[in-house]
Length: 433
Ligand code: S3P
Image (cartoon, rainbow, N blue to C red; front, side, top):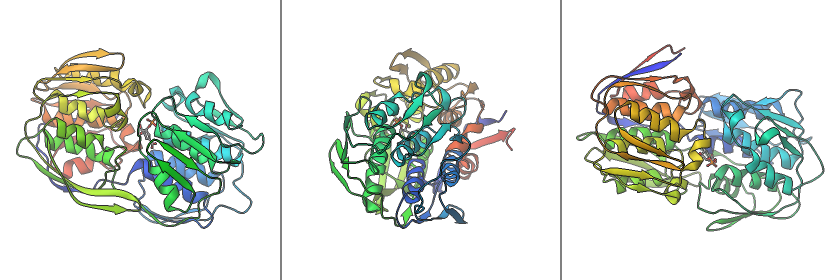
């Protein structure tokens, strides 16, 4: 089983993190169902995105590789997508499964979507309910994958108030709405990442937006070219490593800073971190910046449900910053983290405790007192973000740290080990392919 060994180190220099995972999934899906197709540059070639790519190929999408991260996606086939004769495996990817379920339901594709053991434990009722309300034929035993999709006739647009703040559910409903009769509106309880809405508009679909409300009108996108910015969720680990290392200076260039998910920057600012956004610009309709982080003292903060919605994937990294900050940090309103690739509340509380941090786990979060990480061994619970968070802990610790079961990092950040070494972290892999 692959493990990492870490020794204390301070990061520095400059790095361009790989392409954004959320945007890469959407680029593949939206171009594959577009009238003219288009080209994707900077696609994240992680296991999650490659599962989406292969699932689309299996139903007839014409996706061709030019070069690393550079793909041509052909127009939506005149005869439509074809039902494959085998279940489509989305691996570890909740985004792949939930968004494709929406897209394929709208297109009336008879298909079974499945995934690995972790994905098959994750809740799917949240998409099954609205898609059924639109008229979709979709089944999930006990509300978990595999998802079985059939055809009952065209879907009808609905107005749907999301019970949970989830960009995946919002996107699944909007993608189904592209092929429905009548308009489809989603109302969010809190703002979440709006990559789907931005990309739909950029590719010529009809989208209307106002704050927490978004409406799509039927009609597949026209198509166009997409450049994928760097993934803020990947950058977040190195931001924390630098912010918590006094004297460090790290520049992460070309990072996506979509306001629906840039909460990690805001929260690190609240902790007192020195982070500067330079060269703010737009790439393919998405805000992008070079993120410069300088290390210094941090202080504990309160993180609540509204914060979590804007930093849902960055909480593991933020907890590492909190663990070395001065004072207490309280995390509440984070129950959603229990249904991610692992139960991230439990996985983080356990690992923090093993590295000597005083932590008390609650149903929807945790409380912890900042201190110093001791050395020791922690388990990732097969979760890529937990593994990378504890790699950062290892670089800030007083003794050597081993992180167990790290192979799943390839689902979102296949080059993490190399990039971590590039910026000066003392990390060595064992048992890697
Ligand atoms: C994502 C939305 C979030 C996030 C996930 C990616 C997306 O999930 O955790 O990693 O691409 O829409 P939820 O919608 O379940 O919060």
